Image 1 (cartoon, rainbow, N blue to C red):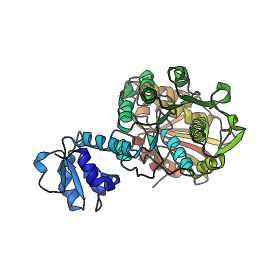
Image 2: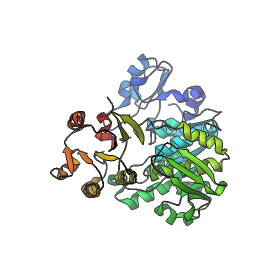
Image 3: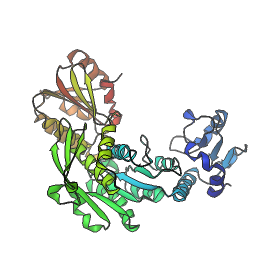
Image 4: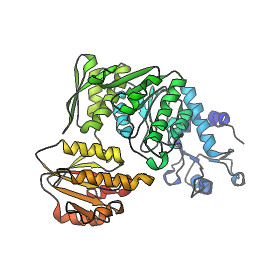
Length: 431
């Protein structure tokens, strides 16, 4: 049986090449065999070695027949222990980011800003869960000064587990909203779970960045010490901002630093909050305003999050990576505040709402049918109840909606396309 310390001494230079996916194995990688609900990674060890893996981490004693196979008691437990050992050895400062909406955008803004002044890496893709976080920690190198670590959660205890894995030094919660209600049971469960980050930082007497524009977070701010509050100046935070413009792009002023103006191609109140968070954190670490602005300029969404596309003489706001009731209403707020253009909304289902699903989809339809929209297109069985409403065109599938759009695409319109990732709405505009 190989201990974590033994493995670390042997492979410390290759830790960033540990992978759990044999499909992407390259010569010199280390394969980590993990067990899931529908698969056992141990079954693919031979494939990984044949593809050139330097070693394979295995927790099935019956498969230890090659000196390249490293036997451990439990591969997942081994991964967590290895990642924490590496994190402690390097001592890189970690800024954790969680929240119901805006996690990835805030993380990307922080990364682009910090890279201008510090040697910084961040969570890649969707590596924000119990497997992705330790794999992200293993990417750290001795010269890295900061890691911007995104933390996702589907159920109570998830954030606490990720904190115990990574031991962050600083943290922020973007907001509290109606996301993953199926796992949390309600908005109270969302708040309690996200606050597990602040609970951990409080225990370690570390710094908390708190969005006081979020009423649920502002209400609990006195429960924590070492807090830096950021928000609009009317809330009297430590780091104060003023809105100049929210649409079609954002201009804001950092009031508490001598009225410094910042500009972003992002749009909407939700992205204003993401920008406030990134600027407040960067200011805390002494990053100069010109570098903050250059970092903001560097970030151009291209991942179906707040992505602006010009297609056939119309502007598409493609926000099809994720959706929940809070983010849906935030996107509609943006549409409602834009005038002078024909406005279309094309919405897909909101996933992982559990028993709240019917009520939330009905509430969404009630709102949009009262809005000033030229066309409302709804896709999927979650909206079938709206079929027959004279303001709505309902489509069973993305394919049928795309067929209709091929011959009915508007000219000079503003089109919001938003739904959960499982809806696949990007197929409406991306081949």
